[in-house]
Image (cartoon, rainbow, N blue to C red):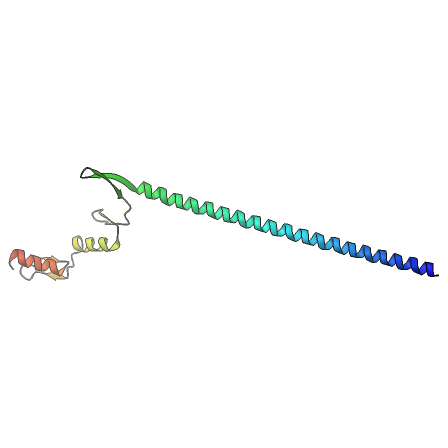
Length: 142
C-alpha cells in the first residue's frame, strides 16, 4: 500500500512539474511575443521618423529651389548683386509690383484713388499726404 501511495505521489509530482513546465513555456512565449511586438513598434516609429525627415528635407529643398528660382543676378554699377523677384502684391491698373501691402496701398492711394484727403484751396489739386500739400504751397506760392 505504501508503494502505491508513493507511486501516486510521484505521479502527482510529475504532473505538477509538467504543469509548471507548460506554464513556464507559455509565459516565455508571451514574453517573446511581447518583445517582438515592441521591436516591431520601434521599427515602425523609426520608419515614420525617417519618412518625416525625408518629407521635411524635400520641403526644405523645394523652398530652397524656389528661392533660387526667384533670385537673379543683376549688375549694379559694375558689381554683381542678387535681386529677388518674389513680389506679393501687384497693382491691377498699371501692373507695378510691391513686396508689402503697405507699399501697394500707398501706391494705389497716391496714383489711382482720386479721393484725396487734402486739397489746395486755390487750384483744387488733391494730395494724399498733408506734407505734399504744404510742398505744393511752397512751390506754387498759393
